[in-house]
Amino acid sequence: MIQDIAPHIYHNEYRPVQPEEDSFLLYFEENRALADWENGEVSFPRFRDYPEVERKLSDRIIYLFSIDNQNFYLARELRTPERKKYRMESTRSFRSAAPQWLSFAGITAYQLWHWYDSHVFCGHCGCPMVHSDKERMLRCPDCGQTEYPKISPAVIIGVLHDGKILMSKYAGRGDVTYYALIAGFTEIGETLEETVKREVYEEVGLHVKNLRYYKSQPWSFSETLLMGFFAELDGGDEITLDTDELATAGWFTREEAPAQPLNISLTSEMIWKFKNGEV
Image 1 (cartoon, one colour):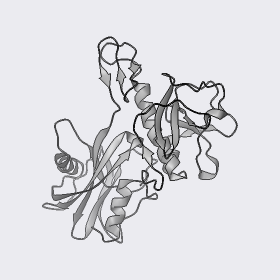
Image 2: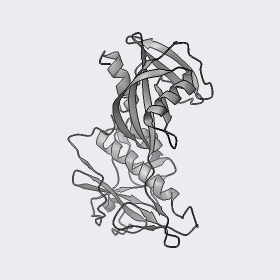
Image 3: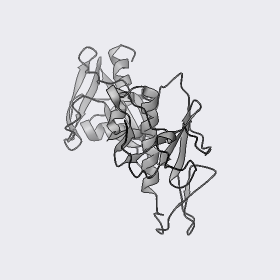
Image 4: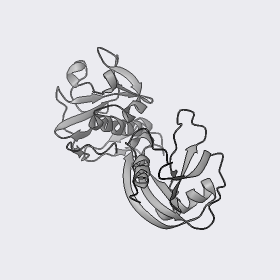
């Protein structure tokens, strides 16, 4: 999966040290990231590539995290970001760009950028937010409102029955043509187990039992913490499709189950576990 970057080690502790000349400098606009994307490989600018950017922490230069002993920083503004070999490209490119540890760094930084960009002002009183120097938190100096990075819990569900797995395609996503597993976000006041049962029933009209937790994954593409479950069908197997959410759904044997083109997601790993006879 995309976060499996060993032997590299991701350090998410908030320790805002001052950037150095060779520290990574990340920059985003909407859903695009600044990088060198040559031949399917990604590399990010360093501060030395943008000498006009002051190497000093502020509300415009923000410490993000480190991988191994290399620090990553967010630039909130760049006057002329595209220069030399660096250009803006969709963050979806992180799904397939190598090396994987830098793709993981890029999409994780994008999630943090989106949080900072969405919380410039206090949602309660409208006052400009200020950065904490002790933790990754924004605080309103007027009313005291605090904001921490957004993480949305969601479930991925592999429904099993009679040697088959339930797979589906999302509706209204022309660029997504491959099959996936049933998935959905956890609602307020709901347990993960309740989410699993509700999402399966809402999307395909089926009931499940014997839920088994598999594994979790941070998925910064949707600011989500994914939690995978396998479950057994409870009752009849006739599908009643929610056409607002899904374009199609069906039961697939291990041989028939279509694998996703990239093995960076929890969904893909769970499908392969089924295809290989491990569940």
